[in-house]
Amino acid sequence: MGYARFWWLPCLFGSPDVAHIDSSADAVEFHAVLSDYRGAAPTFLWTASEGLSIPPPNSQATEVTADETVSWDTAYMSVSATFGGDRSLTSYIYLDYGTNSTPQVHLSLNVPDAVLLNSNVVSAAKVAPAGWSFWSDAPTSGVVRVFCVSGADKVLVPGLVGEWAVSDSYSVAATLEGIGTSAALGDVVFRMEFCGGDATNTTEKATTVVRVGDVLLPSAPADGLVVLTNTPVAMLLDCEPAGSGSFLSTAWHTRRLKSDGSYDEWQLAEYNHHGASVVFTPSLGGIYQVRALASVVAGGVDERFYVWEADENPTTGLKKRGKIKAFGVCDEQWQIDLRNCAKSFIGSTAYLELTDVPAQYGFSASPGRNDAYKCNLFVAHRAVQSGLSVPAIHGRLWRAHPPLANEWGDRSFAIQGWLCIDLSFCPQPGYISSDPAPAGMPGHVGIVDFDGQGISAGMNNVNRFFKACGSHATLRKYIGEEL
Image (cartoon, rainbow, N blue to C red):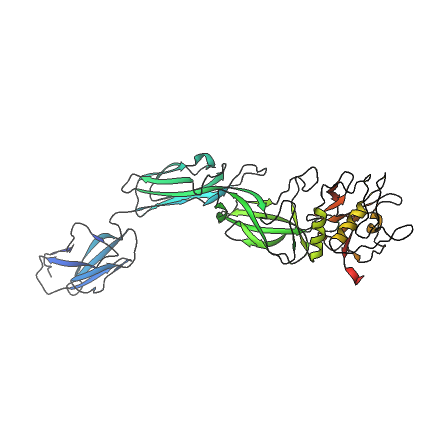
């Protein structure tokens, strides 16, 4: 049985020179041409690889569409003609499809939006993950270059910049370290380029080197913040350049001073997933310290604790250098009033040992002489001045003098209107604190300030040098007629 001589040729009508299908355009018609054949009409069957769709697969002409919107990909089609029995011919068409008619290269530059400044950090330098990747729709040849367009003096980028020969895919993992504060948002710019082969491409990414300074409480005056419970307190991190705080996530912690002078454990108070500020509303009275854990959003390992740091006024002791600053929260308004009244006398010499203090506030005069310590008189005067009462319990002819410092510090000694605080409770501004001395020696007494220091009449003036909280001290709060 002989076979007729024939050959099989598919071709693309309308665009015979470029076998490319645009996935966003109309369907393209393909037609099977059977040449040099004499015989009964054959049956046809079109097939295609994944990504191409052939609605009428059993006709001599068919329309082909691309199912997926891709940049560029390759595919094949086949058409078979069957002549009856087991006789058939098959031919293939190789084409590309997608939004581009040539293979495309893809660049991905992974640089964080921000990195924290590494200067003034004692611990190991903080680094942020960085890197880049390259891939091509088809094997190609060329070079990838990564370099810093601007701000190179503000970052260290070991392993990130350089030049690499590439083919179909390549990736680099590196780190980014901040060594100089950005002058503006996004002023450090990286560029990634592909050159050579049959395609070119470029991408850029900007980053900001953020300097994080102190924790700030904007509403806190220079001489200390004292508020009532359930009062919102704004907290923020001082960041440069302006606006760079939006790149940070911040976890804010607080802890309270205990009566023995130590602090309890840090507790998470507020969290801001994308910002450098929070509002904290304390529900418990006490003396609070604040710290914030700042990390670059999605930066992973680039994080550091920042605290509300205090400096020092050597004359009055308003702040202590090297210490974490604090703020006070009071249960009742009388505490704020008493503390503010005492604060207004800081620096005063009206209660010196050799100074005559006139009779006032229901108490007798106190003449100036050696060993005429007047810290108890200062406390009594400020309490009465702020609207509280202190009993007069001493005097030769009548009771006209307030309790002594050692009596304020003696837990077994009752002072009308003033209750001793259990050591398990946290101190608050406005409490009276006394450091009793052994028998025959004078003690000391003062008023607790915003940060746990005591405002008291000292040897040279009224100041804040008195350590009002500690195992040595006795704390009392005013309860009025309840006692």
